[in-house]
Amino acid sequence: MTSEITRRIEIKAGDITQLTVDAIVNAANQSLLGGGGVDGAIHRAAGPELLAECRVLGGCLPGEAKITKGYNLLAKHVIHTVGPIYSGKFEDARILSRCYKNSLTLALKYNCHTVAFPAISCGAYGYPIKDACKIAIDSVSDVLTSDTPLTKILFILFMSDQKKIYNDYFKKKFGKS
Ligand code: AR6
Image (tube, rainbow, N blue to C red; front, top):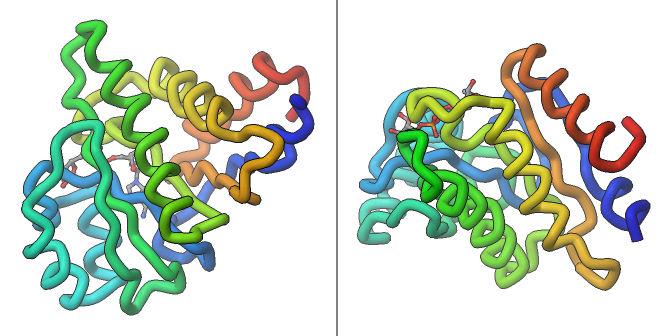
């Protein structure tokens, strides 16, 4: 069972906007109308049609996810999720976990089998990367049952120190890298 999970997970450094996958996940804000960080990068790379589609989605609550087309991106879809603004309360972890799980539920509904995640909430929203990384890997692993149609989940880290933190936790959890 463990190998069913580990062979589907990949941890890479890079820019999420450059990936050829079925869906990339955006760390958006509740308005879904764009912002800085990975959100700004995705909107710039996808082009103005992405914002036009986002305008009719009616926003998104923390922990929820909504899907659009990818437009000028190589990815077919963008899944927009809203992470918690870190407060140190127990609730933060629950919301962050729901971001990962709801994004994958939506991916499956739209036949997306390869999905890339950034480190949701770990920039402007201030979530400590070591805590967020555990929630990310644990939440995704829970969804990767042996019969899932999800074939590849990529964690795309913008900074090499983040990649090391993910690799270290992956190794600790599964005993391999
Ligand atoms: N590819 C992959 N990861 C990236 C990229 C990229 N191109 N660019 C940045 N990151 P943040 P949040 C990483 O701030 O904390 C926005 O303004 C970055 O290094 O983008 O969830 C929204 O509109 C960090 O590790 O998202 C919201 O208002 C991670 O992506 C707010 O920021 C997330 O950082 C959301 O804050």
